[in-house]
Image 1 (tube, one colour):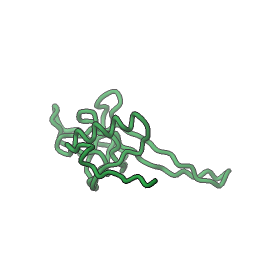
Image 2 (cartoon, helix red, strand yellow; image 1 turned 90 degrees about the vertical axis):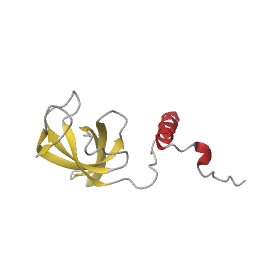
Image 3 (cartoon, helix red, strand yellow; image 1 turned 120 degrees about the horizontal axis):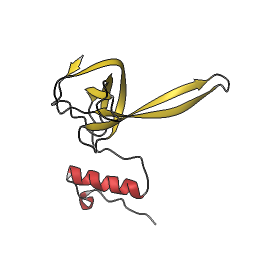
Image 4 (cartoon, one colour; image 1 turned 30 degrees about the horizontal axis):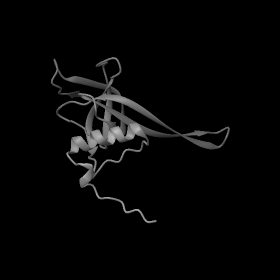
Length: 131
């Protein structure tokens, strides 16, 4: 399958395809797609959760955003870290995307996100504190 990109020619996909959620869209034409997995260990009769974060090329024709659920496919190496490409958006993010991180870094990311969405903190609904 060939996907049009604004480069020298179409990018041909091959091999595996995966479905995941876009957790970062900060870089130009690159998104970080996160997939959750559940693995069973027979020796301990327990399940272990893990997640995989894959950088993928985000063509202008698709332009996936933060929170979207996308399908990615393997392709040739595009850069040092990118060997996957977003092929289609399965579902768009609805409403505000809430970051799961806590601390100073999360506040910085939230402020950047608010700048992107052109919403100021003063306009957000305030939580009432009951004492």
